Image (tube, rainbow, N blue to C red; front, top):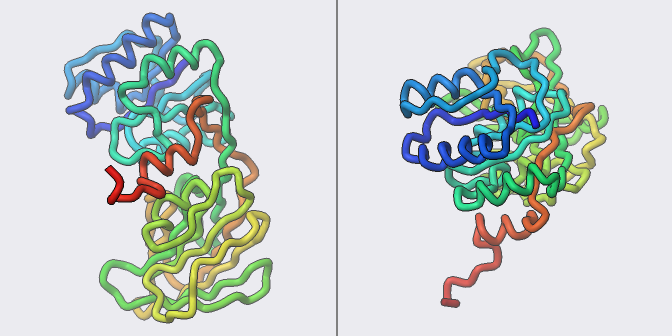
Length: 291
């Protein structure tokens, strides 16, 4: 099995877990390729030199499986690297919360045993695509979690004129507007009181950030809809963020958000469900009075 390993460079205290991961891959006789930046972190910072078949230096590679070692941010970066190459991704959590990277450090060996026995399931996750009229968003213009339209720094609120399938919806006066996939509904969108959406739902959610009006609320729409946006700002600029990758744009540009024509494949263990993740990560339904 050809395995690619992508990782976070902020895990010095997790080096024992990382070494266990590579030891397990070696014992399974996997053909291991490592992202070059992560490999230099392992060798230069952790003084650990794993045996590898090669380094991944660009975004074109042939793998059976990609391992994302870190938190959800690392998983999002790995998904962007994999792009539309149809390589399933397994998230190993050495970060904090971990919705996408939900395999804990204590489960590394068991999970990899299941992986090499082909005992796992694959969930296909929806992505969003951003089209920008008049100026191109540099780099990867897809988002697995959310596309955020935000004001710049401490400037005054912005106005976001929003249409669905070319029919006017509303003009949001707010600090911003989030357009989130079901995967992203437990990320930034949840922090602004957006609803949690089951990953298999064919929906996306529009969640305003600090709206100036009390009569606007998050809105769930079918993921087949086309969303058109126009932005007004007093300082003539605003911020577009795709899964944390941000660029400053001038007002007057029309933005279009739609469902991508491909999905991200996420590897999940058979004995682990989204509802279990909600209970474990968000203490879903927990009663502090019950010991």
